[in-house]
Image (cartoon, rainbow, N blue to C red):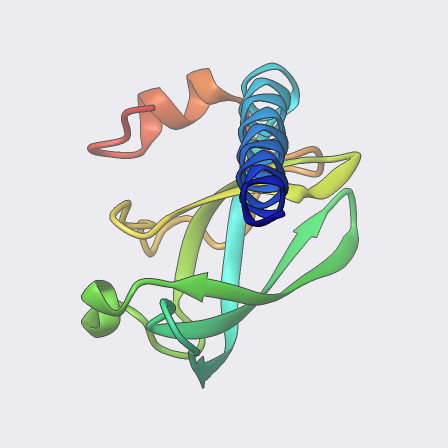
Length: 134
């Protein structure tokens, strides 16, 4: 009976890992093929839980509408880079904001106040933002 229980536990664990891997693969594929870049603003910084340094809430504009991304887990190792109203480069999929990359290490020049109506594409970001590599 104990071996059967262990088999179920191990099988369940493997299934969860596979589902997580498929989700990661799909979200990366979706970001690479349909992703747009824009500027997000940190609205709120909250203490994180186990395995999460802290949580941030972001807002950004896309096609004239304001969107919110809440409860983004952020590593404690970048704590000095995070403050309210900081501008960050993000890459997102217009049809699903579950797929997002936040680039904490890319400085947004003060001369860039807004983004185009439909966001930037990868070529523009590569050409105009220093140190961007994807």
